[in-house]
View 1 (spheres, rainbow, N blue to C red):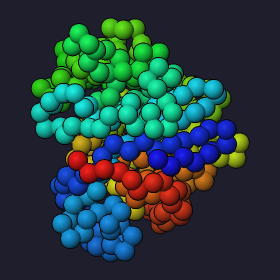
View 2: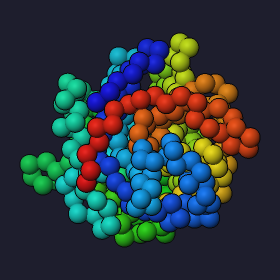
View 3: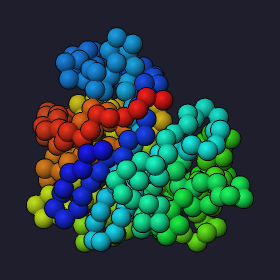
View 4: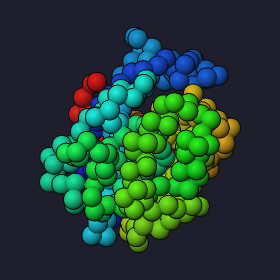
Length: 298
């Protein structure tokens, strides 16, 4: 795993798995296929398997050390459950142990949103077969709009699968009293602040890092592939509200370009994170971060 230092904050990419689930046309409805071909030289193979015509999707968590605390952004896919239509993940505790972090060491878990591939490692089965928080001393930051939206009593989006995810990954956190429910924005410490960035889900959040002269923004699923830098209005098939996601995406990318901020999405392959610049009506990569390529295939 590779670590970079941003001001007083260390950022480590924690890999889970690498997948190529959908074609660009399936992943990004209404997109221009020529956009991929015109940028093949740098999109393939890091972000697109051009021969198979499949978008590359990495699943990863981010380990932050800030203000004396150990923080996890997103916990990946579950490893100890059989969720319909959702692949199994990799063990987050095992990955963290390789950098000397035990579950009890984690102080905060930030869930950018409540989709299965972002909350699967929130819990695990204890010796009695009960599902409990995987990080016993951590607060879990969950946005109020997503908690409300994915509550099975009101859920209309994929109610079967999403209800299982909620029951296994969210309800045990709420029962244990380890949830910190936030809305609009939430200051974590002097370096880190959460803010709502709706569209992909109603309560999707982004985390901004500001420390010394360095800026970064963890954008979760506002971006799934770098073509969305070139065409910011292009939303994925997984977005609950594609139009709102596009509006939020453009706003966040404008801020990142104007502040020389490192953009860190949840699912980029290749170098994983990028500084961007304005380019006509869109944006373009300016400098890649260069996180490790070591991500296992499912």
